[in-house]
Image (cartoon, rainbow, N blue to C red; front, side, top):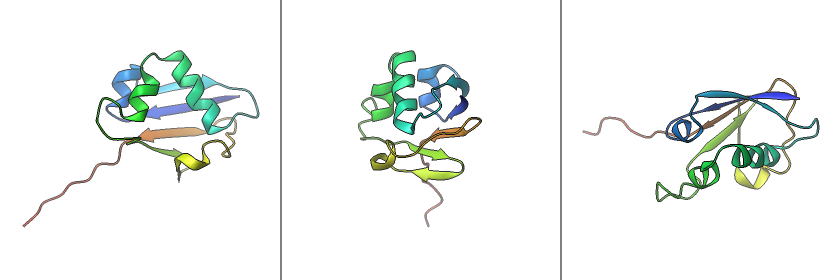
Amino acid sequence: MEITVRFGDPLRKTVGSRRITLSLPEDATLADMLAALAESYPGFETAFRGDDLGREFPYIIFVRGRPVTQPHYESVRLQHGDVVHIVMPVVGGKHD
């Protein structure tokens, strides 16, 4: 099956693209996708863990528009045509 993975900054810089298409086995999970990305893109695993940011696992993954937390990566099955977003939440705003 093929899925699309979209990356937010700064992870996009590690992969070298905002979006990639990834071929995975039909029964692949989100954990399988992350393993494939780590294998294909040097530095992905350490960047995803947040080693260079000093924050552990700073990214949120969305599958079919829903956030998936780390304990569920093994149980979330991907489907052909899924678009997976890996983004870092941004907090900000004006303080008075």
